[in-house]
Amino acid sequence: MEAKFLEQFTELLERETPVTLEDVFREYDNWDSLAYLSVISFVDEEYGIVIPREEFGKMKTIKDIITFIAANS
Amino acid sequence: MANFTYNNIGIAGLAAAVPKHIYRNLTDNKNFTEEDAAAIVDKTGILERRVADAATCASDLCYTASEQLINEMGIDRNEIDVLIFVSQTPDFRMPATGIILQHRLNLPKSCLAFDVNLGCSGFVIGLNMAYSLLQQDSIRKVLLLNGETRTKVYSFKDRQTGFLFGDAGTACLVDKNDKYGPSWFMLDSDGAKSDYISIKSGGYRNPSTPDSFIEREHENGRVYSDEQGYMDGAGVFEFVITEVPKSIKKILQFAGSEKEEVDFFVFHQANKFMNEHLNRKLKLEEGKVPFSLQKFGNTSSVSIPITIVSELNGKLSGAQKVLISGFGVGLSLGTAILNIDNPWLGELSEI
Image (tube, rainbow over all chains, first blue to last red; front, side, top):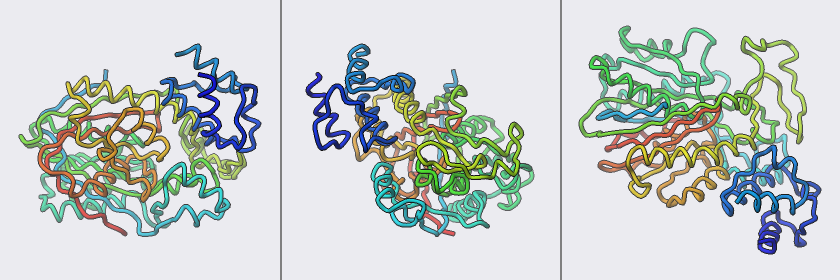
């Protein structure tokens, strides 16, 4: 799941270099409220999980998102 | 549970009116760079919207749509026993704008007229009220009006709301006829999220003060005053993608219907990103889901009826099933399955 997720995330967030598990996604220069909506939408479509905002607020790295999905699917 | 079923009550006709001034999101909002505007338009899908001038109220748009509908359908005004005006931009704080419209439209004094303070769910909930009142033998026709001048509510300097909303008014005539058959409504409220979409000041909880009119910069460069609309876009998105699909599955079950039997799904036109997400999540056929938001933006409770008028004219023939769903401010959610049989649809009026 991790490899596919990283690939999809790189495309979703329009990153020029592949994202990594340790990336702190809020530090991306193009991170904004629209990027947030893209992530929530993507996770819902791909995994059928709507990440609650308060949970998302606690996440720092890409790995945190993957861990949440794994624990809730 | 606020579930309703009706028989042989339905929509006889629909008309819509918009201001003639077209506001182009890609070029007209000078508070943002064209690059920023393009990025926002790309996500929201709203290329343009109609903006009412200072002298035009929601009621004026509804008045024009009503006159068109009554005259072109040849309706006897004396048979309109109820007028419902759904709006969050009324003419006055009192009296109810619906009562002013009863007089302007030359409806009889024996007509019940009132206002309903609901937004994006307001067409579905207003329609449910119309159907409910028509169960009385003495009520012959109900005129349901949805009108909004949302551009007067939101700050054009707010990145989240400054590109979304448009002004419009519709008139919907509801009556009784054996051809309509059954219909189903499910209506939900979630007041725990009442602060997701709101105007903080100007009511009696927080009366207007000189300070409440001062524009302030908030997080992410959003600029608005406490007299203007605030929206927590992410919170609303989470609500919609969680609750709306559930509501649609439930109403199909309630109506004993499959989604394949539904001819059209007409959703509140929130923004392209949210609406397309719903389509994909519900796996709906593209041709069954009309969009009008690219032309009119989000017009709150007007968005469902104006989408029917502008996108389904010429596409409705014979008995068809239409699912409608409105969701937003409140938060409030209304979903219905209607049997529609050749309603009269007016050409869009511009004033």
